Image 1 (cartoon, rainbow, N blue to C red):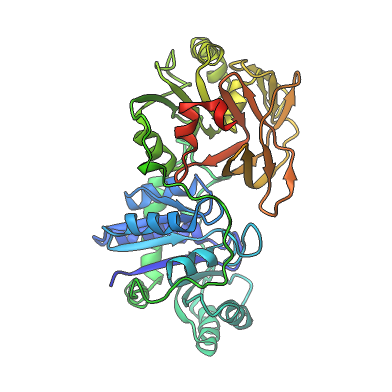
Image 2: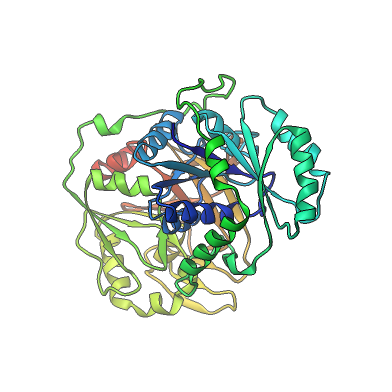
Length: 451
């Protein structure tokens, strides 16, 4: 039986990402092959996981993905690992709609024990009712241990251990505050800038955790029979169609150009694997290359184009080659930062205007930043595709652009997020997940059939 566990917390900002990264590296340094996973749609934490574990981190999301797909991904990637670690999202029970898409839902679906990370900086024995509530709210969730964060003294920890003893959850250690293991943040979450020395931060976190966490005990209590129980039958079906597209007959000789550099890199690993199933994936850099490669399709994923406005704008040959590809009927998926790049201009927070590709008559501005966040379901004729919206920029249409589809949030409320469709270009603020659907294959065959 292999150790497996999900790291969760009562709320965001409890330190679960830092502890996850430290444990991934600590266990790797001990000689284990550790497979990381991330609950939810986050595309930044997975990059840090991959660096820490030297294994590609995989998203698990019960809103964007079918339950069978989540199970398949977990089983596939954990099979060859010695230890599987899933980092939760937000608070343990926080989902898109009640528990839907929450860490708790994934823990139940995969029958994985939960290790809590609790920020106990301003709390002592009062942690007892908090732990009791989390443990007993749903009997299908197995909370087996807790790590206390931001605890600087053994005497403080003794009060917290007393609470654990009375609640019946094992205390696995405490983490004193250490500024040397803090990863800088940006407005979309943890930073991924090449300016930061993430390797040193992660290694410091591993060494710090080794002093205060009983990892041997943690691994022992997280071993369980992989088929010990069935998934709780009260979880509602999402109703989305499950499509076994890989058993369908699609051409697999497409050339697909994928933007991949510091400005564009918010991609899901399974999305890229799906593209690879359909042909040759050719990576290129809108920042540094002169021209986009010859291709049947262009994928402009999201990222941080607002951090590289001068470089993107000054690369006029690249801008023209992408404009020509779009204008000549090339098939394009542009998501968030990719959509911003296809527009007329991006305006920075100081009001400076930087020309971009210019195919879409829309500008985007960071000047009056406003958060737009949440899961999205898009109805395109008979096709349903799900994804996630997370941005601060605001779109300013220079003229009325054609749009397609109807967009809903996780509660079924119609949203005003536009999905632009001009020639064979589909562009929006939404980051789509197509790892278990035929969307991209159908898009390549006949874009107009699905939208």
